[in-house]
Image (cartoon, rainbow, N blue to C red; front, side, top):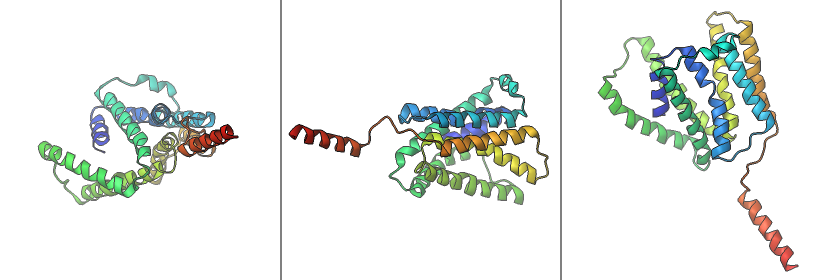
Length: 236
């Protein structure tokens, strides 16, 4: 909570929103790869196609169909910090799978308390204060309750039910929701946004409904049953 937040908001001080979004779009792929390496998960062909489709959809939306714009990213401090945010969130997601025995509300509460303890001295040192104006106050309270604590709680609950790589693909919904909110606010919808949204939804559908692959590691119960069968065979 602390590291990701600091990386993200500090990155937005040094880079554009489009660059930050493009870099953040690789998070599902990083999570899927990390789950394969660290959790020994196997990513099936349908899940892999889903990840790639979702990434392509996000890139189409963010670049307005000009995929060559990806090559124009400036290597600056902000972009480097966004890579740090991607790395932190990926490790956070993968680590969350190891908390299966802990209630999501409890683990989220502990994380939130630790974040407050760590960030309070930082806030006091930097001279942070309460924003002025009703609109700013309402916005801050909303962010603190829903996108922060609420989103982390729902995310931790999701990680108890689905593999980390599969959960990561749903991060592409951020772009889709952003487009939907923009429409509500009166902005028009381009063909690039429609095409990108279709790819994002298609990728999520493939990851969610496609056949899953078992982990490389054999379950303890299966190991025990196999050993018992072997012992019986030897006795016979």
